[in-house]
Amino acid sequence: MPHFEAGLFFSIFVLMSAAEYIQELLYRYNCVVIPEFGALLTHVKPAFIDSSTNTIYPPSKVLSFNSQLKTNDGLLISYMAEAEKTSYEEVQKKLAVKVEGWKAQLKQGQPLVLENIGSFKPTKEAKLIFQPARNTNYLTSSFGLSSIISKPVLREVLKQEVEELEEKVPFIITREERQKSQFRPLLKYAAIIFIALSAGFSGYLTYDQARFNSALSQQKAQEIISNSIQEATFFDTKPLELPVFRIEVEKNVRKHHHIIAGAFREKDNADRKIRQLRDKGYDAFYVGQNKFGLYQVAFESHDDPREALEALKRIRAAESRDAWLLSVK
Image (cartoon, rainbow, N blue to C red):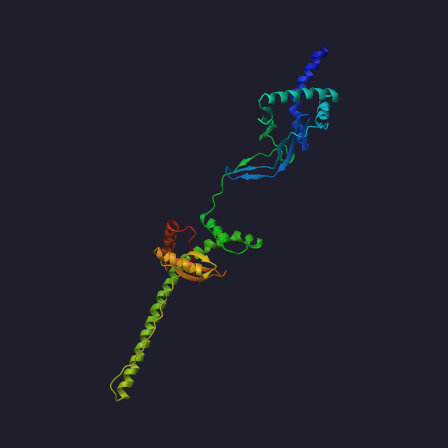
């Protein structure tokens, strides 16, 4: 092959392979200078999740371009000369011709695309806008890792509501308590089952206790009346005057299932909430302070747990999704 044709072939080969050599250096170095053109810089970006697309991206190197770093540091040319088994000066000349071609292309307003590296677009102010390619990850520790599209996890509604409630309660949850919280869902299910089973039994005991108290009160009243009649008849000559007496019959009027509208640090805020709910037609009342010192306000209360759950669904749909059920003995 004549010397001229061999030189032309080598020139084309070097020009066609410049982008490939730059790519190989980007895997090893954080800065690759293209003499009289600019420098490609990399910095490590940690793994992240794109919540809009549910995509998990591995750690990567992000490319950027600095047109101010043009001074030849010898890295690119030395690497190309060693790979091509030719002289440093020869590669330097061929690369300079290639860079001049890039500049002319950009000066004409045409974008420059370096495969697997990125694209350069000129602006009216004679500046370059660099858009890095997203299909290549230059971080060697992430070799073989690709992005993963994950389906969103559908959590149980009860667990979401509990977590939202925990965020509103003004206290700090320690790491140890967080670790224990993994057992909370099981305890909640057990509590719901226990409430359902014990509601009927406790209701029967309440009814039976009320009957017993009523019968006891009636018996006590009857004894008092009989004694008074006997004393008036046999030991007093005055006309019969029965004593006036009052007997309070204890009734278990307290309801056990409260639909909580909110918990407030200030008592005035709790009273204001009660007035607002009563204006809307709810039988609102002040439940009391919880163990955190917050004043709890309820929409209404129920004896029957099933009625309480139905009312909770209705209030959540019509009034507030933050309403929750408090069951007490």
